[in-house]
Length: 182
Image 1 (spheres, rainbow, N blue to C red):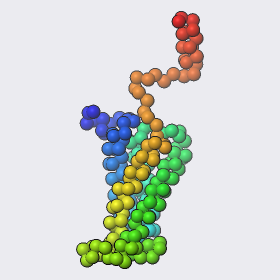
Image 2 (image 1 turned 45 degrees about the vertical axis):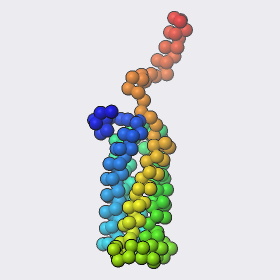
Image 3 (image 1 turned 30 degrees about the vertical axis):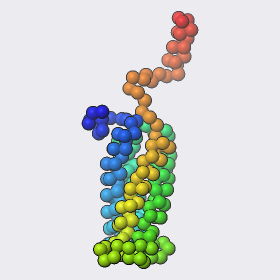
Image 4 (image 1 turned 90 degrees about the horizontal axis):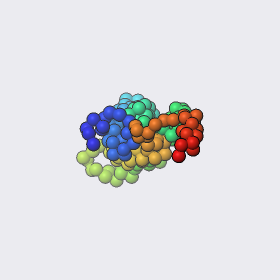
């Protein structure tokens, strides 16, 4: 494998797609986390609500870059349907994120999270910043879910460059020719 293949051209190689997806996911995660932290720290919304705003921003970045650089061939040709399916996988990831962040939250959906109540990290980290630790843990778990779900549900392998694309009429003519000249 050449270094150039890691960054340029369509590929169905899972390792290359995983590598590219790390960059895209990293970019989307930075956007997600910045938006989440801005909403939490500046707008003072609860952690779970801030995570939703971050998710939406990160999802938009992830979809745009993934469809052009990571996964070249969608199984679904309709972009809207493709985006909705992409988003549904992401929404499942958001649900996982919420479940993972919840025990770290000071204002969680179900009250104060367990790790905050137990002051798991002692005085090392202020309890109102525990949600960031939960988010980092969620990023790793949800990244794996998102990548493999999208790869195997939404995107197909890139066809070999040597494979010819033939129309139906060309295929019929080729079949007739083979019958006439075995």
